[in-house]
Length: 113
Image (cartoon, rainbow, N blue to C red):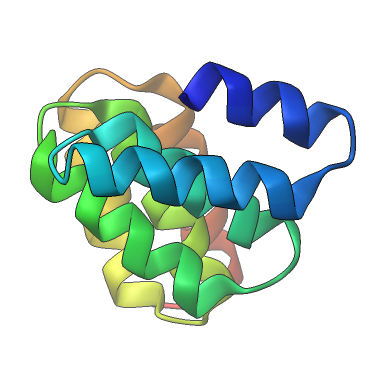
């Protein structure tokens, strides 16, 4: 269902993609990729608070996924929760996600800690 939702999103059918992802989460409340995809859809339209909520769910379900942590940090940063973004990026960095190091350096340059 997540792959179908991504196709729908690519076709500009955001609402249909959301429905597909909500269906996926109803079928399996522990399917982290569906929650990460929901994070992405909300992030893309600037709904950062919702993006954080879905990102947190994805990370809770799959805490060893550095990509989820990286993207959660991006949503937290956009929602101006810089301390949370830093924690997420540090966790992603500890898992070997190189982009997290870049985000941490950028965060340090902005002084938004």
